[in-house]
Image 1: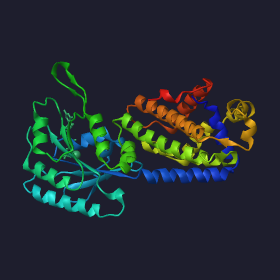
Image 2: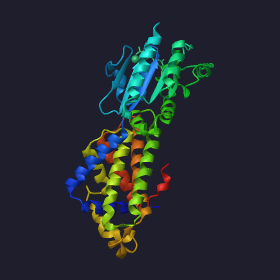
Image 3: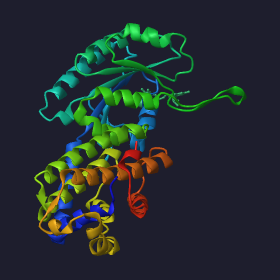
Image 4: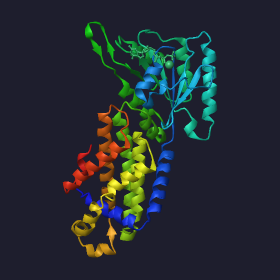
Length: 388
Ligand SMILES: Nc1nc2c(ncn2[C@@H]2O[C@H](COP(=O)(O)OP(=O)(O)OP(=O)(O)O)[C@@H](O)[C@H]2O)c(=O)[nH]1
Ligand SMILES: [Mg+2]
């Protein structure tokens, strides 16, 4: 159990010792760092024309990506689709239906290899989805060959699109495409059959979660930000950010830190807010992060800080006499950081769940976070163990 009001003491001490311009500069720097660390994830989506690649892209990723024009052609059959603010590039490949599919594959492999030579790993292709539609119930030579070629360079997931009735097809795909990491059946859009039968979309969450498992660890934040199908995947990645921040806070507190060094904790927590926001794929700005941090510190409604300093500093840190020249323990620093991080994640999970995966506005985030924070503070003690 930890009392959240003590967080304000940490922040307050930190901010008191830093002038507002430094704070603004620091916030900007930490945000840029969070965006840089998040990087960009690259997904190759291949499959014959009409199998449902564009539909899948639109249903899984933010920003109706496949509708944003044709993308930039990089080879005869591959185009690259990106959108400002989304840390993702899609490499959309066709041409498997052509007689000259071998040429398509050769050309594609050449592209993949040349990208893999880039020193910046943000340019590599991190995963491929090979789409085959269920109605056809056929795996062609082109697909078998392509899966072999791609598997030499990246993890490949087989995606059976427009799924309705398996009838053993998935097992068949697995048998014919043994190099795939997994084969997932998806139905990207809800279908209404005659007599009003409805087949809801399916498999999207599973595809996202399996993909997150096979891409390199350092690109999971970017993937979490770009996808909209699984709030759980965003949450899983964001919780690891909190663990990292709590560890850093504990290290800062381990010395034990003299009170005056509490300033070390403020950057850790600002950075944590920045990384969580980046992981969820919120629209990021220094103004937003400042407002958010201000909400956490109570700096906006000076009341929190004032009240905290005047009446609670004594109450929540027993032996305040020692505190004046004293210490914030490693475990207190870690617990405070974890509590704030988990509270922020819970805020975002709730907002994303309400909006069907689309990012909420900055105003909504700040409003909801403030409310949850003040609720938590009202219930003088807030348990960190109830936030699974
Ligand atoms: N019933 C059903 N139709 C789908 C599904 N996914 C896609 N479609 C339909 O299939 C058609 C082709 O889908 P696209 O997403 O354009 O296919 P594509 O692979 O991007 O095609 P190309 O860009 O030509 O290579 C469209 O009419 C989609 O609405 C699905 O899960 N179920
Ligand atoms: Mg398409």
